[in-house]
Image (tube, rainbow, N blue to C red; front, side):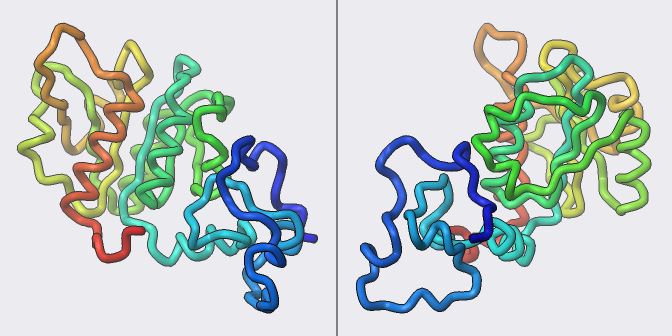
Length: 219
């Protein structure tokens, strides 16, 4: 047994599939990507059907062949609870890497175990993140509703892009504001002053996906 599947990765509901012998009687389970424990006990993880019974490393390897050139970063100077939701959305869009700036510890509950399939990186400071982006040839697009920001809806995001979000409440740091190559905001029409950071991240990621992804490869 591979030992890669933990109890936190299993659904408590009826979703998923039962043991291979029950689901495919008489058929050999001869795919080298399959996990012996999942074959024996069933697969109730939160994964798409195409990945049923696969080992975690096999799933990551398959996504790696299709990951987008988009990177996402969030500043964690206030122990932001939105990071887990950002990671979950990034996984859904096959983002290359999620970068966490500031505190190393973050609440993984909102990630719903998707952090096991998503590349993550840590940077102590925003300046360190900006240096990485410059070395990787990534345009840094900071997202915040502050004066001077261009409308996201009217901006063509660069293909080689790192979307940068600030902590919930204070927004992006001064280093992010001055170091970004683009500064964009999301149009709002109601009474609230700002959109939740995880929601804003999802909107911005999807804006990039609409422009640059190959929809024929979506599930």
